[in-house]
Amino acid sequence: MADFDENGQQIQNEITEDVTNKKCPNCGATVVFDPESGGMLCEFCGYKTELPKADADNAICELDFESATQTASFEWGAQKKSVVCKQCGAETIYDALETAAVCPFCGSTSVMPAASSDSMAPGAVCPFAITKEKAGERFTSWIKGKLFTPSKAKKSARPESFQGVYLPYWTYDSQTTSSFTARAGFDRRVKRGDTYVTETTWRPVSGVYQEFIDDETVMASKRNENSVVKACEPFDFSKLVPYSPQVVAGFIAERYSIGLKEGWGIAQESIKRRLQQNINQYIRRNWRCDRVDSLHFSTLYTNITYKYILVPVWISSFKFNDKVYQFVVNGQTGKVGGHAPVSVLRVLAAIGLGLLAIILFFKLTH
Image (cartoon, rainbow, N blue to C red; front, side, top):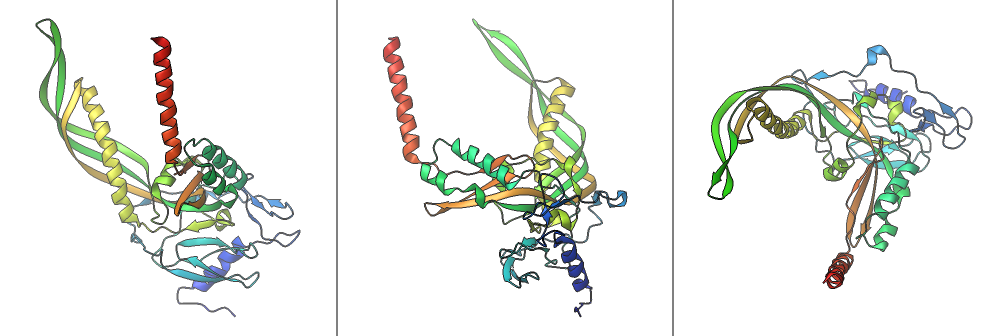
């Protein structure tokens, strides 16, 4: 008989594993989520089944930020979990940040229990739409186009090593009201002797600017390189589906390590940059001025809501000259992000060829 903790954690684990570790009725292998069909697939015999449609009561909701209680950030990257596969008995060690995993020995899937009772579950998922094979094709094409990347490095980067991962994201909505002061500049052309110069007349302006911010996104992971993931954005949030264990079956899913409040602080910095640009444009339109200077504003945020979602990426990395290079393919669009090694010799050779071409062109035209 199973043991139960005071929160009934064992019951939840049993239910989750039963949902995500479904067996193929034809051959008994584990069925996983299939990006091409959007259903479940047995990779051994080809058996397919559709996922049930989401109930109207299980729609994706914006949650009230002020009412949230699970807001802490988590530094779980150094912690580990030991997981025993019920299918083959193999014991595997995973980072505590991973919520779903695949047994590397028999392919059995499971959703891991929460690392903390303060960790909230995702509310929505952007399902994979790009298969591992297509991700590999996009990556191969991308790295072949890197002219300054050494051939040896291109051979080291193997697209078949891609791992499908769901990364955690926060999205925030908010009504913003910003009071601002600035100087509006009005240009005019004035003749000075034989030439015309531009003179600017400045006048102080002030006002209130309002804008609704919809789905300001923050990657909630400290473990993956943010710039690489950013390079493969955006994700299409119109394709979001309510979270269910079936959708993450067969993939790794990472828990958030940046909490709700910390994420909101990051989002505000991005929102401020956007508001600065938009207020600048607003002043230009409203006062019909040519330039804006000394802009200062303060913003009130109201009706703040959020979503905790998972987005799909294919991640791969390789080591070249003792340095690790990570690559990411957007699991929805196939867009590639990453940093490729650069050969100094190839760059110098390109510069030399360019200079040679300029010299030859100069000689032919003179």
